[in-house]
Image (tube, rainbow, N blue to C red; front, side, top):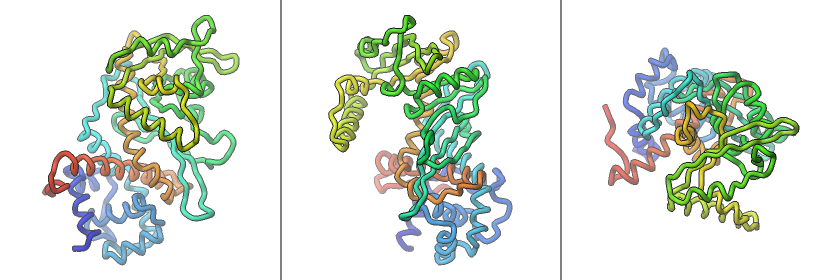
Length: 366
């Protein structure tokens, strides 16, 4: 057995129980035409999604490895049908990580929001920005938009997302802009967004700058939560929000400060003292009603979104090598779930090798 085959055998031990049956139950596989088994199908598709091979190169490599004899068009068809199968595997892997949704109230639809830039290989490779939302906790992708990355207004913004009453968006600081926040609220939707102190100035009800340093100074102990009323502006529009915060552990603070200092050193800059202070906390703004959600519950919902972000963070560099189907929504969704699946498997591999097994992997499950 070669090294690649051995690595594949180890990877299969990380997949959740029943993963092959899920391929048929989800409708992703009706017949194994062109493949000897479900494992060969998954391995072939992950060559394209995980390794960043083009469809044509994937077909060539699959044939050389004895996995399948299919055209690049046939592999694309398989990718188009793989999304529900891979989504189910991602849900089960997240459950293994201990991801449990906080109690929902009011019949809301919680939607995790993210965006990333895909750079295709080669000197003339194009750059594309993906905006997408995943409903929680079932990870159903209910919005997907691909736009050129290097165009005016092509950055991350909540304004690109369809929103209506009953939606609650969970977004990172890249989406923390006054115009997008207020536009989303104006559509009747709700949100929980990580605070970006540089992009979203906060004010008091009287219009004075909000004393953020003084506010976080009220949280001297790890795990201590706080909440304050703040106001934001975008032109003549003013909105009232809840600012919720929690102090990190000393270990978490150390990691955050080290990362901040590394980034500043690469840019030849020195972080401002207030920036170093804010790194000690997780701060989010939200318009969820206080009568239904405490500050701690709001932070729990943001934490749930962050678990998904961690998986994608491992793939930010890999995503730059991907061949994204830009004009086909079904295959793009398959590509998205495939990336998330690879990220979650990577997390599990690290956890298993570090904490569970002295030889680095689990025994295969029947």
